[in-house]
Length: 51
Image (cartoon, rainbow, N blue to C red; front, side, top):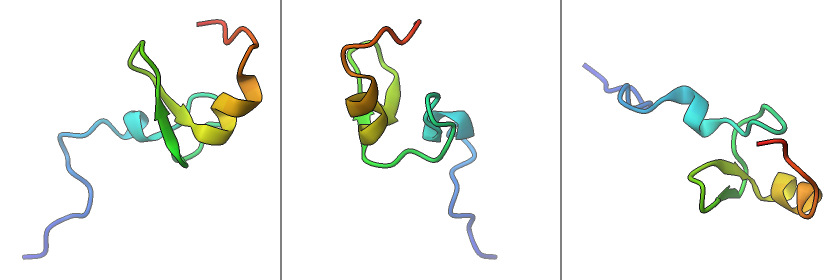
């Protein structure tokens, strides 16, 4: 039987950027533990994220 490429122990929302709501591209982990796309971090850098 073939194994799934997705680990069932991984939360699928952990692979999604909560700013653009797409799959993480160039993931950037922040000190708070959240991950965002590199381009989203650059776009929102210096702006309040409302977190």
